Length: 252
Image (cartoon, rainbow, N blue to C red; front, side, top):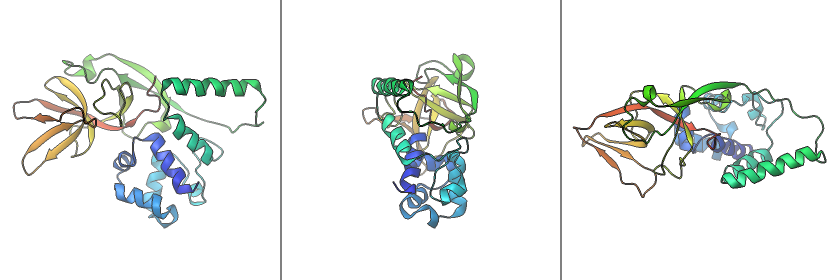
């Protein structure tokens, strides 16, 4: 697997899509796509550094054709990246079977490689709020219940202050029912960005649509079975924050 394909798989394993990643790092989607297609060595060094920082990987190692996490002492092999990608395509039952089989292989002792790479993963505690699509929650960040959960620091995008567990299928297949999204608090979003909104006391995870010429604002679902919500002048709309990505531990 070429290093660019490995890089793409790593991005997709941490973010919902290449566009979600490009939105987060502040590099255009076409530029990220070009880097993957044309090669890392042909890319602007500033863009490569930005991408490496977002993914928590070593810049020098990437230039040498390796993907090495700053928290892991050995390179992430292409088959490991492929395994992660395949794992995340399984449902809960499928992932449980992989977990059980992996534990059995390790416990048997027959397949041990000997010395294992040293892993130094730092964790942090962050609040995760429930039911963002529930009605009548108002200032839900103050009133809604939440739980403090531990996550690897490297997995939390910059600026994120809390997670929200999604309830409903309107954003599938990009954001699945029951998954946790990372949210960066901010009072406004740009057209096309996904965020958490409170409309007339009801909270939604939606994509923002703004037609500046005709002064039209809509909250869009990704699932085509859900009709757009048109915001009118009499509505009360508040932006809670921008969705920065999907938590790797969404099944928790």
